[in-house]
Image 1 (cartoon, rainbow, N blue to C red):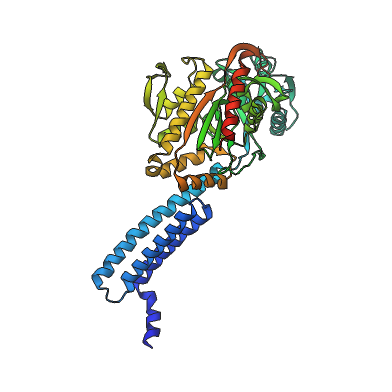
Image 2: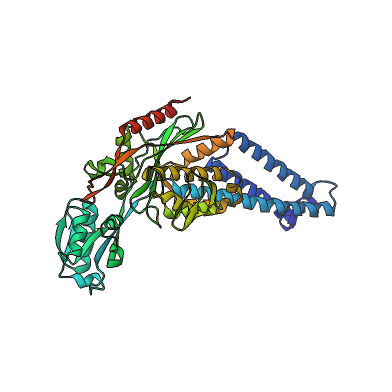
Length: 480
């Protein structure tokens, strides 16, 4: 009878709830880690053993024979402290898992298409243009143009009068010369118009913007990233804000990663490299313009030029760089030559930079030997500094902040399982990595731009430097 009463009274025993909370938190942590599969098995088994020993110890301090009231009280305090640590660990693992889900898997491409008129135009809304003419692109960007025209027709309850133009230069000139009252503009082309009409954004206004969401295709070339070398295309978009909005790719870097030899080779390609762009009828243009067609367009252009397979991509933009560097409390960057840019003084040697300073350093080309080539080398110096800082204790002391920033600032088509397998491999052996860099070269020339519709500055590839770079990439890929 006494035993039965004891079983009933357990629900009124505070010791039971202390031990129960510790048990639930321990189990939750193990389940999360098992699902994410980020810990090497030897560490996972060790963690199970530690948590089990701690649980048995706390149980013994509450229910063991000969344990006095003081020791039971101390045991409860220990359980509270351990539970606090377990809550902390559970939150960290949860944030890490959510971040992986946020950055992996290619997101849909968001294209913003605006109706633009001159600043002095009396129109305040799109309905004020009901009986007027619109300028549209007739060859380029047809899917987005057709989508926008359809939406405009719906808003105006009728079919608009439109005049087609072959390229961006003709389209913008038509607006300035009064041939049409408004133009339908893919916002990713705005910066291109500003190459010829520098004050375009100040001299015009947007009456309405339509957002078109295009379903993304998985074009990754998957490999076992812990056993085989692979290439990642790093694209740095020339915009702030959302990472999945199309725009020019001002940073074009191939990261060749060999997990067996623990070597990373970064190959920078100048933004103005004159290459064929498959998604634009295989016409020649500067590489940065491929980004307007989405990251797949850039990948295909680089693959065709270098003759290599690119397995994955990582995409960032201006906002990404600033936030990532700042959340790391700045990075130490190697500056090759002293110069001033955007209000910052860069001195030769190692210099600590915050996010805005690092962006100014990575964007400058007017003070760099080799111009765009020099800028690419500086971009790789910033990337190296970020990698080194991320592998330091900073990632532990500011983990939640880093995960929050990464979740909204990066995009990759690597799967979460591929990323966690790399992390698991690194945790398993804790080996150091060798980071090297190289650039392809070329000579400046004024050549026809398919998207601009006019001659623009281009960098004609030095084929010998391209061949040398490809040979080095292939050598790193084959190392065992």
